[in-house]
Length: 297
Image (tube, rainbow, N blue to C red):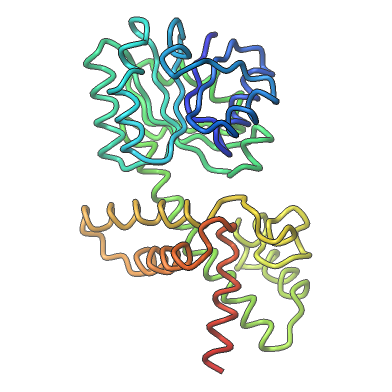
């Protein structure tokens, strides 16, 4: 299958590389030269512009920073360059309303569209073990599933248009809150004289077990593959967590849900990103908790 892949950043490049390795005919494009070089070095053919990548493609897959970027890309060339009945798959993490607006644009032009955001971070993108949360109508999910399976270990059909983004927002609200809780527990353990290994050995096999602890442990040592062992290089960057929790906050406000921890986590991560944590893994929030604990002592 011929796939146009637009957006070859930290997530998009390894996803496109995995599609190439699986035998798909991929044409990639990104506005950032370094991203193009990274993808090219992994075997992804690069085109002169986005429209050239889309021309003749069966599928157009986008992985872009925001809903505004997705809508602009669709309006400013991608839809016009696509052959009739092309399937558009957007794997960006964007607002539910933007996802539905993007689908409406695509469908109005005679194409098909699904939203398929991902969970699993750069490690999952490289390993091909991402989880895809899919919002799709009719037979579109069946068409997309074999493509998504190449890049992900789990593909879940969450419902109609926008349902994939809704699932992603809810999932990342859980992740943001749980990481803060794990970090606070490790700092408390330090104050109480516990070693990191002792706390990990207990909590990872008890009721405190969660992904933020057992896969993305915020302290070096217990989980050798976690970003804490490489000076908190992402991974999942603090700026992205702030963005995703901002989307969750917007959804909370729009629905009137009486949430307290989600909005608080959103404000904590936004401050973390604004004060130097944007490029660090989101688990580096533990350093802010330590610093604030010393100030309070």
